[in-house]
Structure formats: C-alpha cells, structure tokens
Length: 432
Ligand code: URA
Image (cartoon, rainbow, N blue to C red; front, side):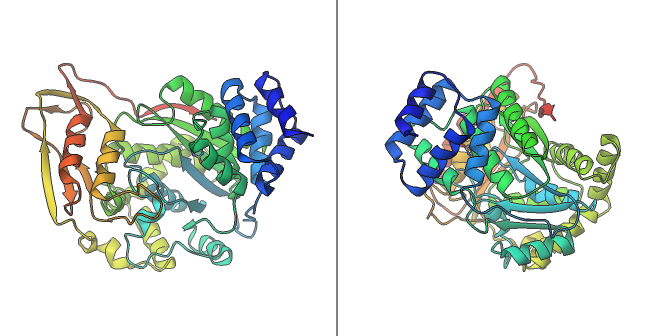
C-alpha cells in the first residue's frame, strides 16, 4: 500500500477500507508516514467526509495505537461521560458522585484544560491534597470500594490521536465531524467504560455552532460506540451562556459542592439529573427514566450525593475540611462588580468571551506549562431571561490583579440585552 494512493482515493471521494485505515494509523504512529502526507489526508477527509464504517475503523485504529484499559476487575457496569467542552462546565464533579450514590460504578479519566479554565483535574486539585495521579491498580481499587474515582490518564492512551490532533490543530482540520468523532470516541473506548454519555455542546462558543451540526456529530459518536458494543447516549445542550453561575477553578468546585447539597443552579442540576438518568438506566440500577430522575433528585436533597463526593475526596487523599467548609478554599484578593450597560432582558451571555476573560485573570492556561490561579474567575449574578436596569450588577470578577481591565471589558461585551424576554432551553435533544 502507498499513502499517496490513499490520499488520492479520499481526495476523489471514495471510502477507505479497514485495512487501509489501519495502514495509515500504524504508519503515522510509528513515523513511516510523515506529517505532510497526514495533513493532506486530514484535509481530504475535511472536504470529503467519512461514512460511519470508516469513522468506526478510524476510532478503532487510534484506540489500538496504545494501551486499552481493562476495567473487568471492577464489579458491575462501569459508566463514563464526556463533554465537548463548555464554559463553567463542572458537570463531572456533580454527576460522578450523584450517579455513584445510586450504586453505579464511575471510573473516570479526565483531562487538564487548555484554554478558558482548568479541566476537571485542575478543579479537583483546588482541594488541598487531592491526588489525581493514581496507578491503574489503585484507580480500580478506589472505584470498587467507593464507587467512584476521577483520575488523570494512566498509561499511553491513543498516541495516534495525540499526534493527529496536534497536527489538525495547525493545519486547519480540527472542525471535521468524522475526525472529531473518531478522536473523542477512540479515547472514550480506550478508557474502558461499558456505558457512555456524551454532552455535545451547541452554540457560538462550542465546536458545533448549530443544532444540525451537533446532531450529526452526536449521531456519529453514538453509532461508533454502539458498533463497538457500548451503551451510548448523546445529549445536545445549549451553550448560549455558561453553565451555572461560576467560572473558575475553586469557584466551580464550590458551586459543585452546593449542587451536591441540593442548592445548585437549576441548569446545572437539571443537566446532571438528565445525564445521570440515562447512565442509571444503562447501568440497570433503575427500570424507568422517571424512577431514575426521582432517585437522583432525592439523593441531591438527602445528602447521599454529597457524602459520595466526600468519600471520593477522602479516597483520593484530599482534605475533607475543604468540602465541609468552603471558606477553606483560596480566595481572590479583590471582587469587582460588573454592571449592566443597558436596561432590558438578558438575551445572551457569550460563553467564549466569559471563558477568555477567566483565562486572562489566570483561571486557565494559554500554553500547557502556564500555572493556574485556582481562586480567580467570574461569578454571574444574572442569566438569560433576567431583567436588569442599566447599572445593576450582572456579575462579579474575582481577581488577584492580573489583566483585570481587559477581563472586565471582555465580560461587558459578552452580555447582550433585548426588549423582549428570551426563552431558553438547555437540553435540545437526546440521541440513543
Ligand atoms: N476533542 C477531542 O478530543 N478531539 C477533537 O478532535 C475535538 C475535541
């Protein structure tokens, strides 16, 4: 086989066979296929697309390029979730303990964030002592014992995807639905869970700008997962504003703790119950979705979800005093109110601008070696649909003095106002 023939085949709109895709991914991983040929193929895929079978084969080839987690020693059905990236998205911190409180096994490998705010791992590290670096044996032991662990990646998962994603990043080929789907699914499949729920964000700040694009990506990922024998759900959610009120690492952990105690923001609570209900069904701990939703909401009120979070923190070496008393989290030196520049209903809060403002304050990384400031960020005081008079506070900036003026200006630009009240729906569609 010659790579040039395969590039031409895809360029001319034909599909690639399993053997051809394996040849490409093996060659690219071991260095016999070079970046310039792979970029050309990625661009051909960007324009010509791939069918479901090709996308499944690409996911499997990337999955097989590295270690594959064997979670069989964990008893019961293991679940996982993935979000395509939201601002203020602390869902995993709430959802994990919440579904684990129903007896579902949550074995979650998460990532660090590059961009707006830290990832789930960075957020958890705002709890003193919390150890995300568990080896495979202790990871499985914690899940078996407490029902949940959230850890950093162990082993060498999907090296082909790592290499290809970095190449796509600099060749204008990230926004290709088959490439995004195979990239995400190769990693999810390699992580070993039996049931997976994907939260596909739709909106100006998300990868998928329209519901139609979001549906295509969600359908493809669900099909890839099912073709590989996993139980799959994808939930399409709106990202026309950040999720919840808090954006920034410890600010988000505090909001997650409040949500686990039953007094979190409605959008975050609803999303966690929605995702949790499908995972509870797929893990066979509930018979109907109604039953699952009811039990999940009960566990947010009766302390079971919060207790499960505490168990996880203890099992992973975190200081439980942080969870018991949120005043222990580091605080920013200054909290500055930002006021509405118009009178009217809030129509839109550009999540991307809010995320970038948080990053300017130090909550996220511009490059992978940047150090994160856990305490800084933004706390919204108003959400879409709220009425404000010019001069009312719409949010608060928590800052330690870094690029504060730039952040305030970005935040002001993020808020859009209208005369008519906008109705907003968080969950746009569910695909199973
Ligand atoms: N996230 C991934 O892991 N891969 C993509 O291609 C896009 C988002």
